[in-house]
Length: 75
Image 1: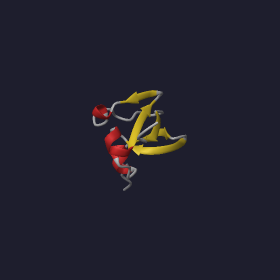
Image 2 (image 1 turned 90 degrees about the vertical axis):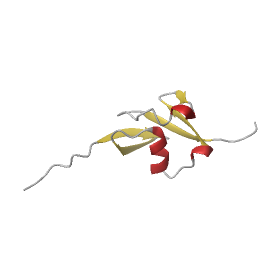
Image 3 (image 1 turned 135 degrees about the vertical axis):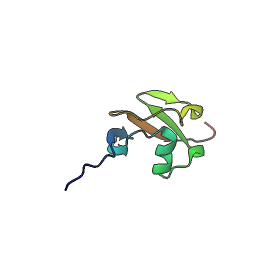
Image 4 (image 1 turned 90 degrees about the horizontal axis):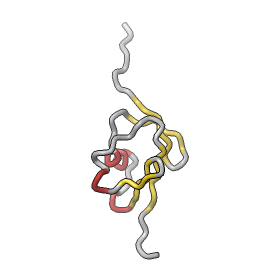
């Protein structure tokens, strides 16, 4: 008997690369999945900066364009 996988996925673009992510993943979980330190990055989703205080509340959606930028002190 063949059983369907109940895990669903979504397709997003991260820094210009198409990727598949688990459904219902928030931005803070995305950083964990990508092994990125949250203190060293800024996140832009669909051309809008997402404040760090919202990362655990913003779920990734199919076809999101996500940019992860290294945070650099100074200017």
